Image (cartoon, rainbow over all chains, first blue to last red; front, side, top):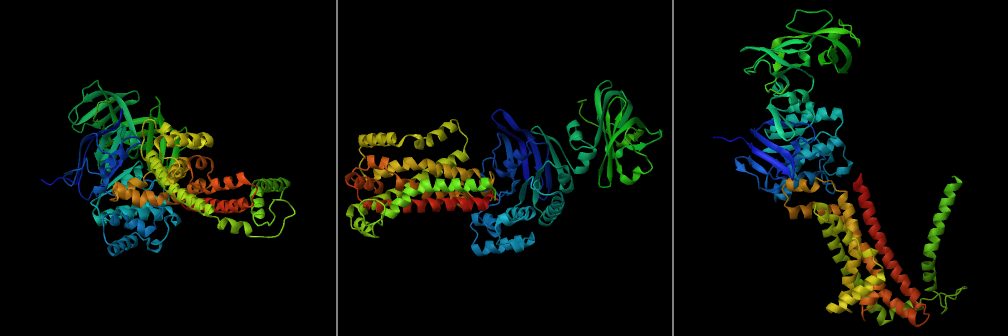
Length: 363
Length: 262
């Protein structure tokens, strides 16, 4: 049997009474781009540091390439990391920084210089090769850090919020650089971030962590469309969550009853007893908004509170009679026939098929 | 420029005049042919320098001073580096007390320190030797070395050492390739500063040196006998040596810290 490149098997990490990672089970295939995301303190960075050997798991096993790595010191692994602070060596120039990993491995001067120049060229920082690190801009330093980590041609590259210090426009550019490198090199990337846009733009699979546990693993579409629990539904944002008691439940469809009406969702194979609490999630871009009542399956009347423009996408924030908040996302040009103004009354509606029943019975 | 600016400049100038005039006087009198330091000055002479250069005692004292300050600065800087690094790298119980104890020696009055050392060295039978002065000066100067190097380590990106391990450096290799190069300006500065402090130090050296005089002790012995303008010449030389050391120490730390703090 071919084991995946990285296996986290019941991994736990505590610092005294504090459990940074309560339990992590995760397998990563060679060549995958995995993003681990979550709010600060969720254990994502600790997980990454355990992969690099900078922290040892308190329980469970970490295997890389089939080998148990729990007690292998960091310098005997080939798991280079791109640090949040970049951690470039300020007393070395660009080329010497890039060469560092090869120097530690005893590669001859001529050979490591040649390979350093290859990587420096590849990351388009050739003209700065002999420059002092301090004289470089943020984006250039970022490229040095990447070249320095990639020069040993590792199987696995760890990235700890590498773009968090960059300006917004540079972030987009570096995302492109990272995604292209990952594709071309076929290296497995494990990318820790708290930014939705970075994770969803680049990753094959996203791991959402919360309070030291993995809340959901899935591709970006699955995370968006079928959040596994309330935490994920709220964390990825732009979701409407409705809670009520189950009125009826058959094999295909479940209906919940709440103060503002009855709403249906596909069961997706989950059976919940009538009378118990349940939540359904409707993504903000699945909700239709009209001035007139419609004969759609699920409808709510709500008052517009505010609107938010991001590029050509508009998010409308509305409130139903009982105070339940709704978010509706639509193209800016769709607003023209709608006459939006704060305080206006609108009819919201969505198809049952677009609603998603949260699998857990957590109200 | 405003009046207050001129006032400030004038004030600073006065402070410098006050601090340095005795030294400048001593330098001037070291070239004065009169036996007594009076104004108006007599003729110009290098007689006093010739006298001390011909004096075997002076050369012996100079040699002792150089050996002591060189050895003390090397040992103190090594100890200071180890202490600063252990404080930077590890978190342990009593870390505050650890630092406090290390920084204690400069707060103890020199005369108490000197007496205590003499008593202790005599007890264990290591007093009155050149190495006794080296021990004593190491104790006195190590706190300065620790403080300078600790300051530098605090400026280091926390991830820098881990980044070296991550790229394949063992702990010793990371020490050699990352920590030491990063601390180099502070280490150089510490070497010169501790050498300067040791070269100047009189009280402790006088108590523990026995017959192995250092230059400051030699100066005192000249003064104790008679009024002898030789002392101005020796004083001038000692002053020039220590000022040079201090200035080099300042330059090392100032330039390098400024460059990498950006």
